[in-house]
Image: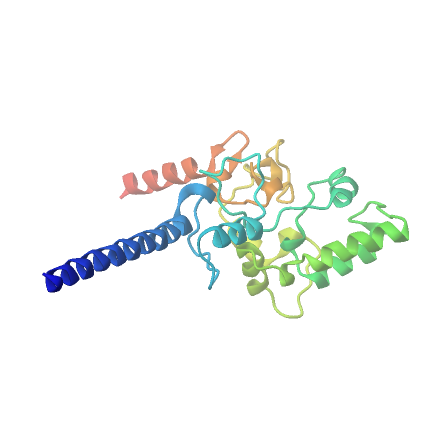
Amino acid sequence: MKHKLLLTSAAILAMAMLGTSGIAFSDDDDDDRRRSSSRYGDRSGYSHPGLTGKQYDSAYSRDRQYDPAYPRSSQKAPGVAPVNNPQYLEECGSCHFPYQPGLLPARSWAKVMEHLDNHFGENAELPAEDGNMLLDYLLKNSADNSSYKRSVKIMNSLHPSDAPLRVSETPYFLKKHDELTPNMVKNNPKVGSLSNCSACHTEAARGSFSESGILIPNFGAWEENEKEERGEKYRRR
C-alpha cells in the first residue's frame, strides 16, 4: 500500500513538473513569436542576441525610433534614422527637405557646413553657436555612425576618400534612381529634381524610402508602374 502511494505521489509530482515545464516552453515560444509578430511590423533581418520577450520588444522599438503616428501593425523599419533635432528641422527644413544625417558620411557633412556662405548658391550662414550645434548633430548621426540599413548601403557604395556634397551624388542613390525617366523628375513640375525627396517618397520624413511608399506625381505608385512595365515586356515576347 505504501509502495502504491509512493508511486502515485511520484506520478503526480512528475505531472506537475511536466506541466510547469510545458508552461515555461510556451512562454519561450511566445517570446519567439513576439520577435516576428506584427506588433512592430516586419522584423526580418533584425537581430539582438541575448534578449527575449519584453526586453527584445523594447530594444527593437528603441533602435528603430518608430513614429507613433503610424500604426504598429503595418509600419516597417525606416531605412535611415529619422531626424529628431528640432533646430535642424527648423533651420534646414524651412528651405528644403531636411535630409537625414544618415544619408551622407561625416566627412561630407563637415564640408557642407564649412561653406554655408555659399550653400549651393545660397547664403545659409548661421551664428557660430548654432552652426556648431548642427554640425555636431550631423556628425554624430552620419551614415558612417549609423547601423540603419540604407546608411550602411550608402557607406558600402562609397570609396573611403569620397565625400559627396549632395545626397543625390552617392553611388547607392544613383543606382536606386537609374530607372526614372526625365518626365518623371526633371520635366515633372511637381518634382523638378532628384533632391526633392518628399515629392515622391510619401514617408521620407520618417526615414522610410521603401518602394511601397513611392508615389510619383502625375505617374502614380511606383510599384504599379513597375507591374505595368513588366506586363508590357511580357506581352511583347
